[in-house]
Image (cartoon, rainbow, N blue to C red; front, side):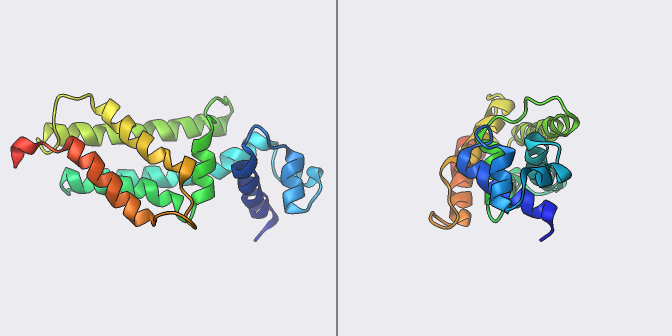
Length: 193
């Protein structure tokens, strides 16, 4: 593992354990076993480290959801795939997603945080469009705001960052199935059956 990657990994661990706001560059340097100045050789500061942790996983989620959205599968299958795409991010990238979702990091104005907000906006817009298209097709129950539904499902999925531990809890596949059934039964147009 290169020094830059090691700094990112150790910073992720410290952020997850202490919280981003409570973590200093000194804490990160100590976790890596280097001097604080060595961290500054690779990164301008804590916010840049945080963005480097969150952005790759965020891009991966967006690409996965775009592929799901563009498929010709039934909307129930797309919903399950979208939940799986989101929740699989907690395994093996558990720490990165936990850090991404536990605190509000979208307040920055620098380029990386602007990009992060853009990615998450596109991601939530794709979720909303998937629900709206499923309603328009008659496969999902109509009459509810698709954005509210999309945000409710994302909220349910994101709360995993508060309690899930891949080493101790229920397997992620079981959680995916449970969340999917819960979401679908709330969306399914029973008149269609």
